[in-house]
Length: 294
Image (tube, rainbow, N blue to C red; front, side):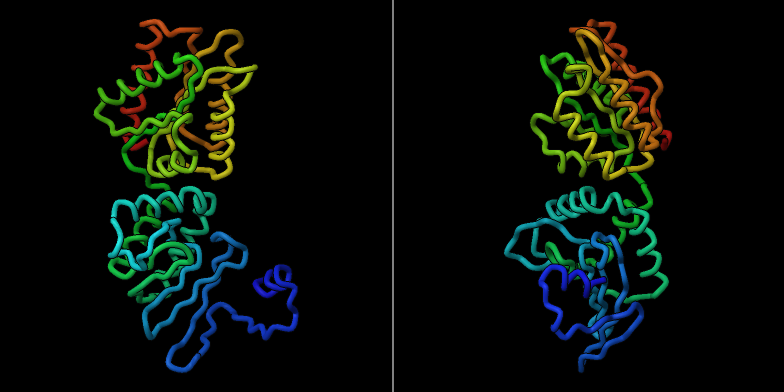
């Protein structure tokens, strides 16, 4: 497949292609190359290359980051930024392929590869602690979320934002860690980074033209394509006329097999104290489910 793709891209049929097969060893003198196919991580022709003499794994797109830096190695950059960029990379590129990541990690373990350094296509090389990305990929591929919640919302005149803040108050009362993302101010790739680690996803949006605000519509289609799994889900929103938004948000989460709380909360026009209390109770319910481990 790799040869075909190169020919399709460069239109060069006369190049001296050498086709590597999985499990094959190729000696290049002092070093030996071993190959492991990793299809759809995240290209059809992706492949790992392992140099056993150096215990070096060239991991293609896996374990990478979109990190712009003049440094080359993991121990030369800020560790919090490195972890954030690694998480963001997996969330936005590899979440959809988590079953393949899980299978690949099992294969690497079964092969007993001794790895002193990982060199991905993007970002810095892992030399200080190559087990670090392996450990996190294993957790993400097996859908082991952290005990935290994520409130994602958009608002038109502030009513849905008031509801979001009330949900957050309920989470506070249950002492659950949470992050709030207003889609007007947060890019969807940053939101997906937090979706990856969260146990609970709470979506809030008012109704516009019998549907959703454009930012929320864009985000949920993006999230649906990446197919995060094994999350708690809930929805809320305000409306003036028809009020379809909560149902639409719930249907998207149902399609992803989220553990959906049955009653989404709808508020007509400005939320009253009773409405905000319902949102607060929703936050508490979510917090309790997070503490129960879903």
